[in-house]
Length: 137
Image 1 (cartoon, rainbow, N blue to C red):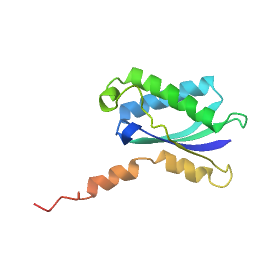
Image 2 (tube, rainbow, N blue to C red):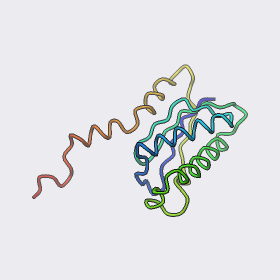
Image 3 (spheres, one colour):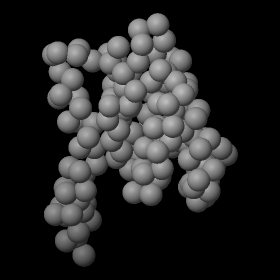
């Protein structure tokens, strides 16, 4: 089964810096070695993460989400204690998430490109865009 999973950061805080993103990807590779969860693509956008995941049909989607969220939170907080200054407690993720199956032959490439390009449009947009209050003074 192929899944598109979106996990927002707690309080939608912007915790996914380049260093945290790198650690997240390393942690996911470690998860991949021990569980029947294969990460095809991971894309971050400052306050949330998109995963394109493949797993065996016998594994429930909720179990996949629980495994990913719990292990990534634990290891990210261990590797990046500065995250706790932004968030309260030992939680990185909100309790909610979005997960949906992806058709292998219908739109896998579209979702893969979407996940891969997370954050790029935002960064480009804000580089050239005026802010709401610019020019009012």
